[in-house]
Image (cartoon, rainbow, N blue to C red):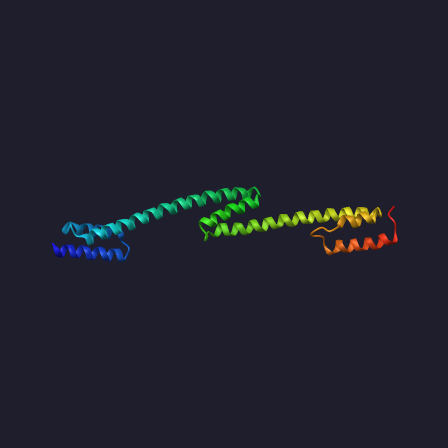
Length: 178
C-alpha cells in the first residue's frame, strides 16, 4: 500500500514537471486512494486543480480577447474602406492596446498616418494654388496692394510666395494701383 502510494505520488510529481497536469492529477488522486488522510497528496491535488483552472481561464480569456480583436479589426477595416483614416487609426490602436504584437494593426496604423498626411498635403497644396491664383489675378489687374495683402503672414506660405510679395511691394512703391 505504501509502495503504491509512493509510486503514484512520484509519477504525479514527474508529470507535473513536464506540465502533463491531467495525468498528474490522475496520479495524485490514485495515490490519495492509498493514503486518503495524507495532507501532502491533497495539497498536490489542489495545486494541480488550480493550475488546470488557471489554464482554462487563460484559454477562455484568450478566446474572448481574440474575438474582441477580430471585431475591432473588422470595424477598423470598414472605416479604412470608407477613407475615415483618423477613426480607423483609433480602432487599430485599440487592437494594439489589447495585443501589442499584432502586425496587421501596426501596418494599418502606419497606412492611416500616411493617408492622413496625403490628405493634409493635398489640402495645403489646394490652398496654396488658390492663394497663388488670387495673387496672379490681382497682379494682372495691377492691384499690387491686394497682391501683398493676399499673402500676409500665413503659415505654410512658400519662399516663392514671399518673393512675389516682396516684388509687389517694390512695384507698389513705384506705381499706384489702377
